[in-house]
Structure formats: structure tokens, C-alpha cells
Length: 144
Length: 241
Image (cartoon, rainbow over the protein chains, first blue to last red):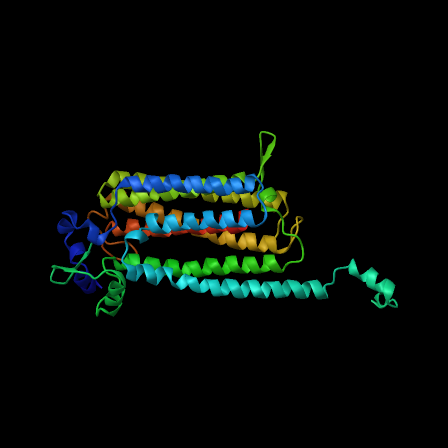
């Protein structure tokens, strides 16, 4: 372990060299200003998404706004706070591409749930329809 | 802008950028993730696996919510608080959101001061992050107590509507709260290491025996931001939807 560490990381083995000006090699170092800007932006976006609920927006407007604010916040956190913006593409793609598979699971889940809802509607029967049919056809309802 | 990688000779070798860089990194006969300490790369891979776990929870929440024939309880009303005789919708959750975002802000400052070798400031911001995290967990405990004791929500039933509301709620927020709690514990451990000068002196860790280094503050930060990231999704799809 020590051996491998030493080979991969000459900078880590020599703290003085690391402190002397190779910070960009071993860690993410950026001006504080950008963090404060993103922090403020996250507050604004959170307030906005809270206001969506507060003002009782409904329907597609509500869902669109919620999803836009959600994705913006997630993007800002990953890009700036988690430093993905400055990482090499090999790491960025290795981490951000696999979650796209979840869209398949999302799609399958939605299709399955729609079908379950449909079958529940059919078999656990909406009660109001029964009397209407019952009046037209000879009372099959009473046998249940 | 080419970033130099350190070869074993100690000389900087320029790395390719763009698509060519990806191919070069992955096909290189060494490590694929250049310029990244392996601890950080492993944390990213752990977070990737955690992404799949939380996504499974959220997607299964979606399926039970679509497929139920009973109306879903309105989160806006369920999580409303009465302050000063006035019922404000979702206010507790909004405050929790702001607290968690602020803790992400203090964490990022801690990482920054860590790389500047500012021991005391790093310690203060780490402790502040832990305090905000603990506040978040405390408010969640309050929320759970209110829901269980006053509203009578159970994992198998609740008086407001669809039975699946309780199980989804306790599963998703419970798992997230556990993550926050573990994060707070590790933040305190890292803060103590920083204050003691373990990272400056490269003192071996008590568990792993690895030499102390300010990398661990950034790795800790990745985990903490991820907890905040997951909350962004939970807030949007569970509380606001």
C-alpha cells in the first residue's frame, strides 16, 4: 500500500513540494467568490421552488417549474460545490453517464404503475358504476 | 489548458484534453483517473452506487403513487406548521432545505481553507457544518414525532389517504437522515483531526493507517454535498409534487 502510494503520488510523499505550489495537482483550489455566488443562487432557487408550492401553482406549470429548479440546483451543486466542472472528462463521464440508465428504470416503473392502476380500477371496481348496469341487466350484483 | 500529471520521475507530462483525453486516460497503462487522489475517486464511485440506491427508492415511490387508487395526502398540508396562529404550508421543510444548503456552503469553505493550510478556520467551518447537519437531523426528528404522534401516520396506514404515503416517507427520509447522521459523525472526526494537526503532520489514521492529508477534507466534502444533492431531489419529488 505504502509502495503504491509512493509511486502514484510523489507530491503527497513530499509535503514541502506540495505546499510550494502544486496545489492544483492534488486538490481543488478556487477563489471563494464563486462559492458565495453559487450559495446565493441555491438560496434563490430554493425560495423559488418553495414559492411554487406557496402560490399553489398546479398542473404542468407546477411540474415544469419544480423539475427545472431541481435540475438547476443539482447541476450547480455537482458542478461547483463538488468541483466536477474542473475534473478531467474521464472522471466526469465515469460518474455522470451511468445514472442515465435510471431513466430506463423510471420509464419501466411508470409503465408498470399505469398498468397496475388500470387493473385496480377494473377489478377493485368503482362502486358507482354497478347500480347503473344493475338496473339494465337482471340483478347479478345481489349474488355477491 | 493542459494540466500536468506527475510521472514517477517527478516530471510533469502534459495530458490530452477532450475526447482524446478520455480515451488516453482510460487506455493508459496506469490509473484512469489522473490528477485525482484515489480516495476521492473511490468516494465518487461510492456516491455513484448511493445514487442508484436513492433513485430506486424515489422511483418505487413514483410507482406506488401512480398506481394507488386512493388519493395521495397533500404534502403541502401535512407538513404545514402553525406559527403565530397562521398555518404556513411546508415551512419546516423549507427551513430544513435552507439549513442543508448553508451547511454545503460552510463545507465548501472548509475544503478551501483546508487546502490553504488554515487549520483553525478549516476546523471552525467543519464544526459549523456538523452543527447545521445536527440541526437538520433534529428538525427531522421533530417532523417524524409530529407525524407519528399527532397525525397518526404509520408505514402501513394513515388517516389522510393512500397507505403508501407512510412507507415511502419513512423509507426515503429515514435513509436520508441516516446519511446526514453518519455525515455529522464523520465531520466531527475530521474536524478533530484537523485541529490536532493530524493532517499537517501526516499522522496515520486510527482506522485505515493512511497518512493524514487535507485530501480527506475534500473527500468528506463530496459526501456532504451528495447528502445535500439527494435532499434537492427528495424536496422536489416528495414534498413539492
